[in-house]
Length: 220
Image (cartoon, rainbow, N blue to C red; front, side):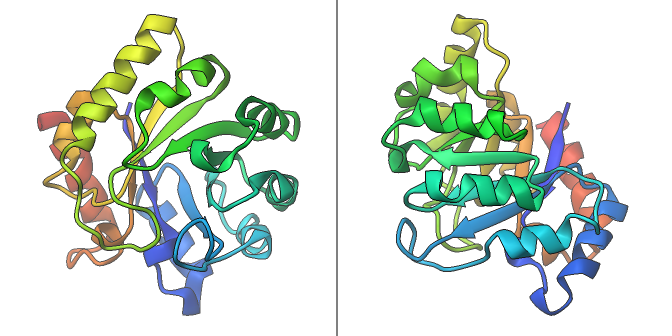
C-alpha cells in the first residue's frame, strides 16, 4: 500500500543517473521529478531533456510534479520524454479539467497538486478524473523545509471527499516527510510519500531510510 518516491531534487546532480539507479535498487517505488520554472515557485530546476535522459535508466514510474505557470504548454513535452505520472497545480490551471484530460490523452496518469494554503474542496469536482492528488506539506520551491503540521488535517479531509465520491485517487504528500512525520500522514490517508533531503541525506543509506519510512508509516 505504501509507495516511496525519492525526489531527485535532493540527489547529487553530478551523477544523477547513478543516484536514480541506486534508489531503485534500494527499494523505491517511483522517481519524483520536481519541475520548477522560477515563476510559479521561486526556484528553477529541470525540464523534459532530463526526464528523457532518465527514462532508459530506470524501470520505475517517473512522477513529474509541474510547479510551473502555464503547464498546458509543457505537458506534451514531458509525456513525450517519458513521464508516467504528471501532476499540475490547481492554482496554475485556468481550465483544470481540460488539462487533466489532455494528460491522460497523452498516455500519462493525471494528478492535481495543492499548495498548503489551497483547500481540498478546490479539487473536489475533479477527484473522479485524477489518479492522484498531491498535497504539499511545505510551501513549494526548495527542499529541506520544515513540515507544516496542519496538512495532516487537510489530508484527512481530502480522504473524506474522495470516499464521498466513490473515487479512487491516491493521496501523495510532498514536503518535510521523514521518519517522524510519515506516521500521521499515513494515518490521515496518504499512501504515496515523496522524500528528498531526508532520504538522500540519511546517514545509513537509501535502503535503511526507506525501510524506516515504511515501518514508521505503518506503526504510526
